[in-house]
Image 1 (cartoon, rainbow, N blue to C red):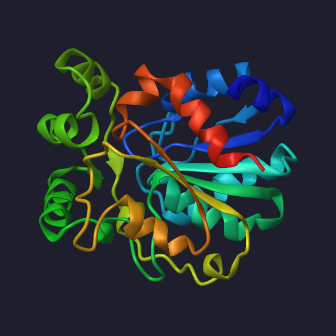
Image 2 (image 1 turned 180 degrees about the vertical axis):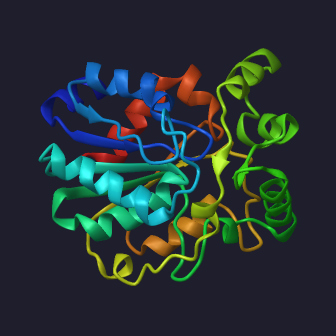
Length: 252
């Protein structure tokens, strides 16, 4: 029934990946969405994929996504942000609000005015990120495997966790530490959804942290869709499930 409904209302998705990833992160989900009859676009942004430059800013990243949308003359888009990509979606929405039909945060960071992505973590995790940043020769953060295994892919078996970790590259640190001016975002009236993957162990839930309801609540009026899944595993192992949940989050 879900597939029939999807064919009745073709959507145009722009999928924005998060940290420690590149456009390949979306391959499975994007393929499933296309099979369901939707158009899917996956922009790469500075400091990721084939771009070796690690001296990038958050503004460069959000501008690159906005330019991708404008260059392809995309309209009525569903702009989806996963993880760090949530903060990119916030800033991109400020740049091209007239192109967007709905925003979807898929365990995406919803940053408060004047905050950074790193501010969303407990102090001990912030300290870890700062230490990793200082240890790098090029102002990047590389996750130790135990952190990746238990926080990012806690539903994966060890073999899959190692495979996924082998695809991780160091993440440019600067964009996650930048304090973001989001006054314009919080004045926008674009419809928004929060797709909450309930087994995600990247953030503590409660006590002033977490995806939902802590960050999702900053969206004001929003649609809530829940799904099984941790931070990264189901994008590889259950792409059909996540594609269907994205449609539920995005349809009229």
